Image (cartoon, rainbow, N blue to C red; front, side, top):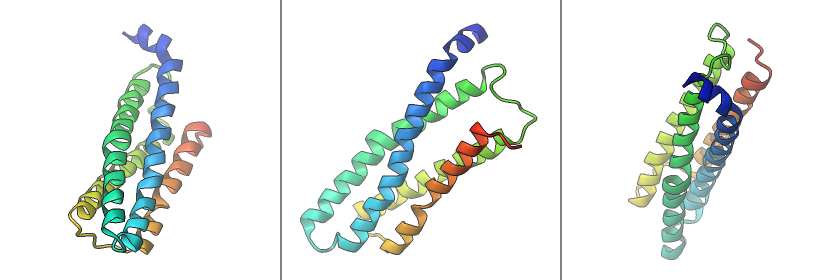
Length: 150
């Protein structure tokens, strides 16, 4: 099995990156939809319903599968001999960021449910601020994986 994983390494890594980019796109876009929804969604019933559909489909059909594939392929990559130096700190910082992004997606999922029930509790400013979380995490992850400073 190890030989198979080692041989498949470039493919696993490529698809891990594709899944991660898809996931990150959703993590950037969904809070932006929430900004529009919280600020303009009450202007018309039609816009409110359209935003609900967009949010739901983004989460269900793009973000959830992309997160799952990112995690599965990341675990496969970590299991390939020589990919991770378990004594180095970079991997644990990256893992902490990925866990934070997973938690952030959980928070976004709860907000999506709130909007679906017309019970949003946050304003556009909150969603603008939390929209920076994926950016910060992405910067840290890229530095940890490419530079490996620790």
